[in-house]
Image 1 (cartoon, rainbow, N blue to C red):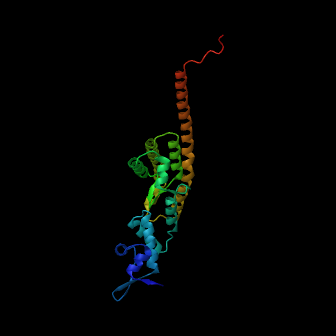
Image 2 (image 1 turned 120 degrees about the vertical axis):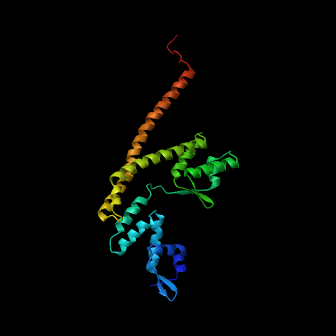
Image 3 (image 1 turned 180 degrees about the vertical axis):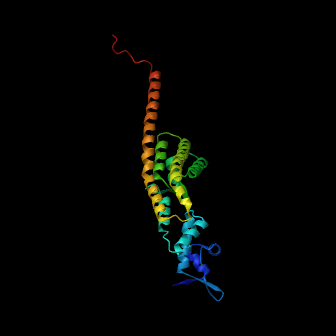
Length: 257
């Protein structure tokens, strides 16, 4: 088994010497083997350190990580817990993110705008989350949303108005998601709070509920939005046609004469 000094361990694990010492102080990482005054770490330390980094990156607290590692050391199966974590953190969309350059964004959305105005709209698009800076380009989490925005702009809707409605719909969707999660938290997730490390049966049940939620959310939202759009479009179109008819005046009486 390979052995590493603390600097080498930190480099291989993508961590820092300071973090390693902090993890040891918290009881998350076993102490090294001492050879004189030099501490030597092995592959088990490296694997543990990488796992700690992954769990911290996914939002686990130090207390929960310690419970998981303690359970692991005592022979308990924490695979179910980590499996639940994967279910909770997997993306809810199969859409593949894309990339776009600034010049392409300007060509699609900012034709005719001066540089300052184009930069302002770019920053606002980033703030809403439609694009994310990624080096010299921009990451597009949802190319579909960017396409919708491009179609609306092409139809004559001002980009500021498109961004306004995007932000409003995003906030509306936050409310919908919060209602679903609140429902499941109240009736299912609260069971996990009974123990620091839930047993496999509880975790399996919760993971199954989360998996079932994925298609259910779309099955609920899609019909409601479809019915709402049908009603609103018909009403708006009717009002528009009525206005046009009023402007044109009464139709000529073709039966006269």
